Image (cartoon, rainbow, N blue to C red; front, side, top):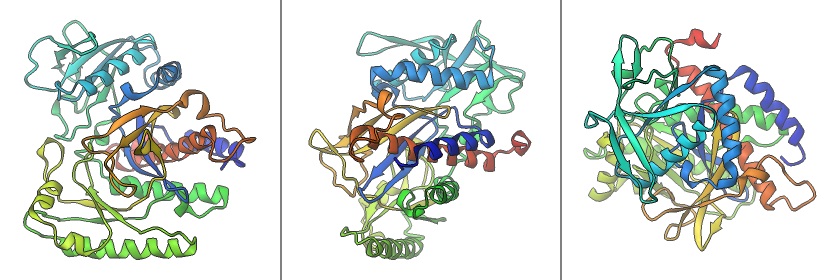
Length: 411
């Protein structure tokens, strides 16, 4: 990857001529030492508060590029956050996002989809800052706030609870990301199918095995964890994936225990996730495990799951097991952080209660690999993280094209 930097950057440049990147995104990566792969791609990133201060100018520049693409003369932007107004970490993310967008020359106000917000509502944050949420009004085919008519609407709400009629079929207002990027429509299996194709093209460019940047996956539908329906599909899928992974481990002489991550095909926040090393584990779930897997954010029942090759992590930060999360606006990497969990193992999901975040010094090093230093030095590792994260972002743009209810927008 380091030897092919020029080819990689040109390849991305050409790809972005054919595909429009999502407005923003974040990618969870796992670095196993022998393999570097994305394990989740979020199109409504909610951790801008975890990025380091030096990345802000980069984020502002990237946001300017994105806004110019959709609304070059935009003055007003409506930002729609998640409904959970008591999560102060999330609200600090909203403050940071508003700060970035304001620096692009936009007047930014916050509109809420929460039916409990019936008038201007001020939220106080622990650091003394405040946010004001306002109810969104719909008049004809436009949405607005009192005395505020936005050109662009930025969703920082992943629509797990469903697609709001309030935002459907808008006229002359650009909605970013589009409604079909929400978890009420989006599926992880669809994303990783698109990623599979992107990874193949990228691997051909570098003449490497696509598996080195790509996790195997499979799908199971019509699952009912409570009624124990679909267990056989899960067990068969796990067995198939484990045998595929074992074959690769033999090919590369890797001395590790293969594992599979089972998780809900839609949704986020690390809910509905389990790590499995034997098919028997999904056949014999106890009640607590079944309850945990059956429901995700907004109380939604899980019926479809993705089975994904587990990727170990060799990263550790401050004594805890870690994985990098890379943040992008438009097609640019603007920063990242380590998700760290002191009581989880190298083969477990780290997106769980007890995690904390450590900013990565991404701003200067992510785009500038150092060919004179060790391949695993910080600038080179971060560059590789940025490359694989951009592959996932490219896959997300392909995925959104494929699922767009109006395909004419993509020629």
